[in-house]
View 1 (cartoon, one colour):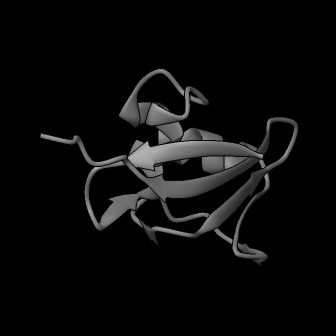
View 2 (tube, one colour):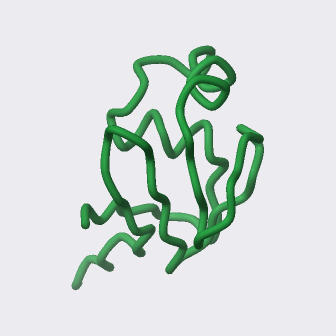
View 3 (cartoon, rainbow, N blue to C red):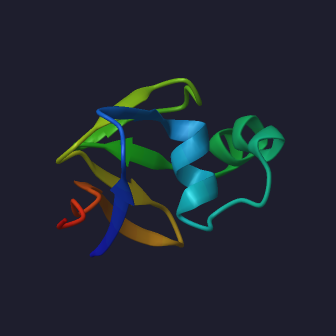
Amino acid sequence: MNEIEINTEMIQLGKFLQIAGVIETGGMAKWFLSEFAVTVNGEEESRRGRKLTIGDVIEIEEVGTFKVVPEPEELD
């Protein structure tokens, strides 16, 4: 399972796909979600605006499984 770090409380699925390197541009999200099966925490999802939070698990057909994790805090 690949871990994708975010520095906010939530991220939209379309942006997540971009950060994870699954798609190159945000404009590809709608097409990608119509062509490939994507589940969030075991439930099918096709909305690029779906909000993901820390701990969510995203499974993408023919790509793999990802988990949203917090970006490590910097120590002063």
